[in-house]
Length: 82
Image (cartoon, rainbow, N blue to C red; front, side, top):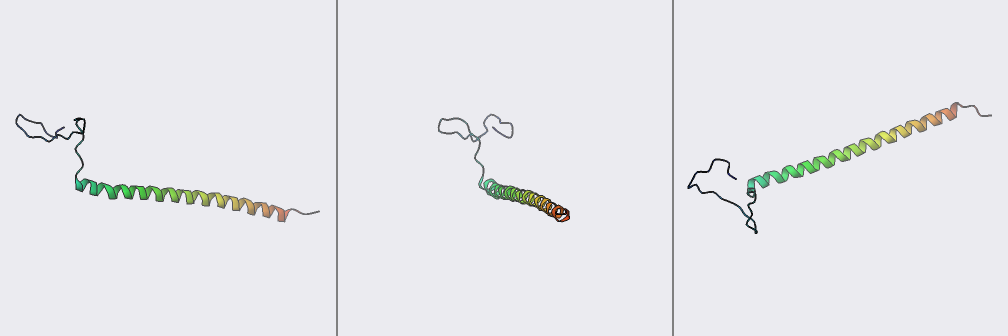
């Protein structure tokens, strides 16, 4: 596939695989060099966000449990014993 119209007599490069089927042109070195750090950064950010969400959810659940325990202990202190 060409980015511009092809005229009679123009030279074009066609990439084919072992079965002689046309394939997408391989990416250049500079494109791969730019994509690799971007992909690594995306994976790192996704992992960091997932870890942060897990930390926040765990902290929230433990905080709620602590408040429930405090409320239960306070009720026991206020309840007169016979």
